[in-house]
Image 1 (cartoon, rainbow, N blue to C red):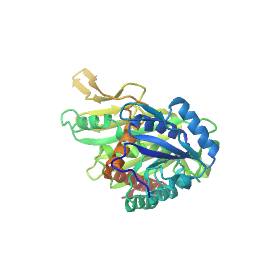
Image 2 (cartoon, one colour):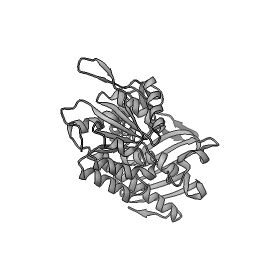
Image 3 (cartoon, one colour):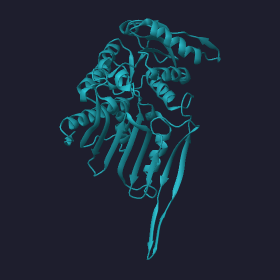
Image 4 (cartoon, one colour):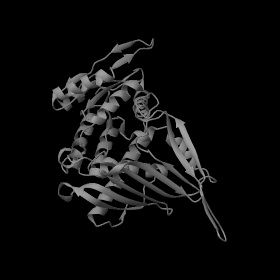
Length: 378
């Protein structure tokens, strides 16, 4: 078992899987200031080599010492996942494998003493997720799922608005929408349409984010009941390509979402109170900018005899934060935060707790869909 010590300055990362999203996290590791990619594993070692080559051409893998001197640190290409996990020069693994095989490699990594950052959804079933977390806890390693917006500096600023009794009031509703319009080859060629590899389809790929921000907005609480329906499906009817869900909380607060592989690019969140409401047009992947933004609304309906006016009252909010690929971007903050927990040996309990809660809501929504939208109690 090999782990970083508090004296270590860098977390040595092993990437398991060469998925597209891993390229973004390659750069995030480089920009984090506390990590370096030491190895990349793919079942085809040539694919791992190609991944390292392509990423290195754009973002050279370097380690910067205390004097600001940069040294090239080209990762090793590995043709076997377990071989990477067993390496002594790996402290943490980033697992970018399909959901159906994720459990096996999270548990294998935990048993080898490697900290685990994995893609979402974290598992096929909540029971699997519980086993994964148990393995991490038993072996004293960190676990986090790869929800980048959890680490954005926008969310704490938005939380302050939601706590404002005059501008927002009491929260009543959360509504989210996450979609993109897949091309004609998606259903036959993309694993997100495969029941064998990604059984949750758009719910796991997109709905995970909708569930997550709904839980965040409500203080990380689990809903008391959920209802969900797949609107359209792939792979013989078992993989959702469009899904809508409803969540009920214990104080009459509700949340709803729609996610789809068949609608235009949209990543919107609306959080409504009894005094005002807040909108985010890019809650998952911020628009290209040096600021992350939101809007607050307190529109006024004025009726006086024949005079009927609906007055717009909107204010803009923003934090200084680059959308992607910079030291202050949300994905870089995610990698840096995970690294800080490892290097300081400070457990991030919230990361584990919110991932499990998201998985339980997803499971209940799938159960509801199987039972024709029946409300499922959590």
